[in-house]
Amino acid sequence: DIQMTQSPSSVSASVGDRVTITCRASQGISGWLAWYQQKPGKAPKLLIYAASSLQSGVPSRFSGSGSGTEFTLTISSLQPEDFATYYCQQANSLPYTFGQGTKLEIK
Amino acid sequence: EVQLVESGGGLVQPGGSLRLSCAASGFTFSSHWMHWVRQTPGKGLVWLSRMNSDGISISYADSVKGRFTISRDNAKNTLFLQMNSLRAEDTGVYYCARRSYYMDVWGKGTTVTVSS
Image 1 (tube, rainbow over the protein chains, first blue to last red):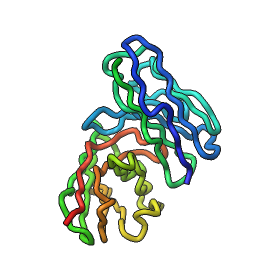
Image 2 (cartoon, chains in turn green, blue; image 1 turned 120 degrees about the vertical axis):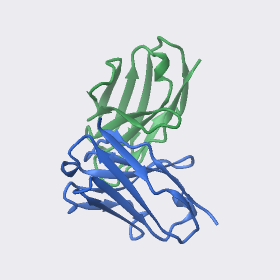
Image 3 (tube, chains in turn yellow, cyan; image 1 turned 135 degrees about the vertical axis):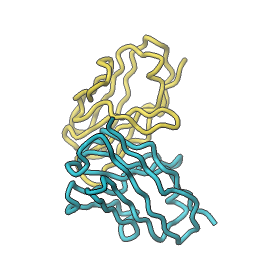
C-alpha cells in the first residue's frame, strides 16, 4: 500500500496568514492526489484534485502543487472558515490511502 | 441538490452483521462509481471499497475483503455495504462517496459500533 504522510500534524495560524501543508507519498503517484477539508462532525469536502485542479465552488485562495512523491496545499490568506482538518488522498493505485490529517487551528 | 444519505448504522456485537445503505439524489446515480470510506479517531480515513457504475468492477481493502460486500441498485439509486463477521476495529463512521478517483460528494455518514 502507498503510505501518505502529512506535515505538520497541526499548525496554528492567524486570519490573513499564508499556510502551506505538505503531503509525501511512499512511492511515486504522478499527479494522482486530492486534498480534502473536514470540519468537526461533517464529512470531508473535496478542495483540490489531480494535485492542482480546483474543485468547482472552492475559493481561489486554495491551491495545490506537486508531482511524484511531494505535494503541497497552500491557503494564500486564511479566512475564519478555513480552520479545519485537511487530508491528502492518493488515487494512483488501490487501495486508495489518506494522510493522517493536518489540524489548522487559530492562533 | 446533489445528496448522499447513509443509513443502517448502529450497535452490533462482535461477529454480527449490518447492512448499510446510501441513498443518492440530485444526480444520475447509475453513471457514477461509488465508494465506502470509514473514519475512526485512531486510524483516520480508510478507503474500504468501490464499485463502478454498472456493478461489474469491484475492489476492496484487504482489511474487509471476504467480510464486506458492496452492491448497488441503480433502479433505486442506492448503494449498499453488507458487513459480516464484524470486529471491534470496524467501529467508526461510514461514509459513501461519489466518483471514480477523487470523491467529490460525500454523505453525512452513519455510525457503526461493534461492542459486546
